[in-house]
Image (cartoon, rainbow, N blue to C red; front, side):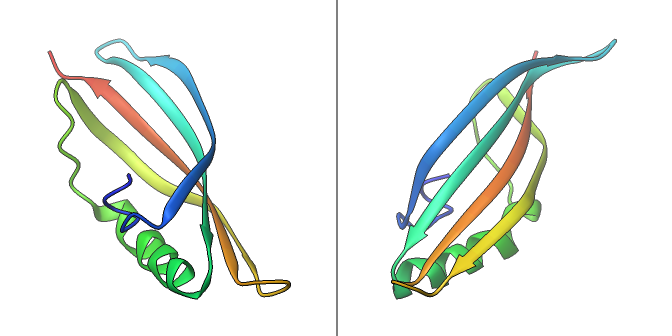
Length: 93
């Protein structure tokens, strides 16, 4: 996620909960990522556009779903972008 955010995003919240179906087991992750400042906001906008189709390489895990849930832009007192995203990681057997 750090690389995808171009090293401009700061994770401000992260929750993880177990997830399972009949054939798969894994975890669902919810993150809030802050992008503060002009350059960071631009990187955050690219992050939002790129996340759903990004091919992750996480040893022992498959990213089955990655999506942006909410985006909050603020210009005052300084530019900032907060991105809420969810990822579903499955154990790669």
